[in-house]
Length: 84
Image (cartoon, rainbow, N blue to C red; front, side, top):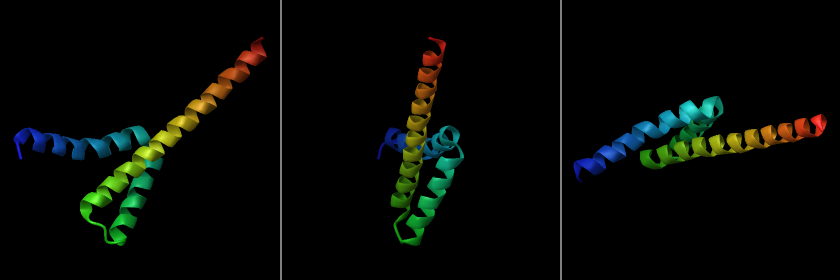
């Protein structure tokens, strides 16, 4: 494997959990830990467990973002109706 490929893989392994923790907040971290523990308890290998944990964190982050944007959009609609 070339050094570039190894460096990219290493950067992804380090950066993905940091991004999930920073952007996702507590819910993403808790869900990542929970899914990682479930993956380990069921006997999955390390790479599969890590991918499941990071994927779960990303899904939780996405759902939280969608729900928050809908809530903010609804609040803007209510404010527009009240002022007109």
